Amino acid sequence: MSDLFDRASDLEQLQREEALARHRRPAAGPSYSHCEDCGDDIPAIRRQAMPGCTRCITCQEVQERSGR
Ligand SMILES: [Zn+2]
Image (cartoon, rainbow, N blue to C red; front, side, top):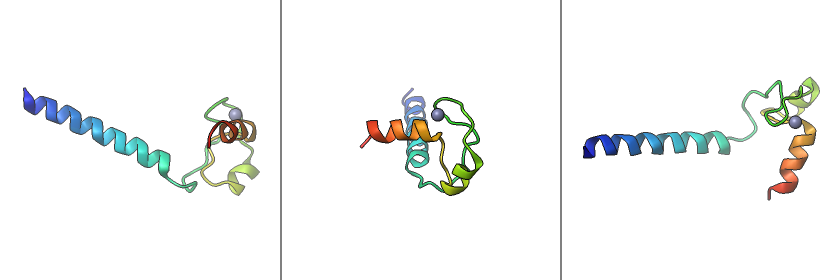
């Protein structure tokens, strides 16, 4: 019983760390072809200028304004 619980929380922690790593990763991964917020195309020129960008310019600005 406790084994099962340990494994479940291990998995949960692993997933949390993965999510954190993904979140923390600097803008170096492949850029998205579509904005993850609104689904619009992200212009190729923006993807090249901002490696790893995941949002269109509009959503990125909204995100930066609402964030810190
Ligand atoms: Zn967008």
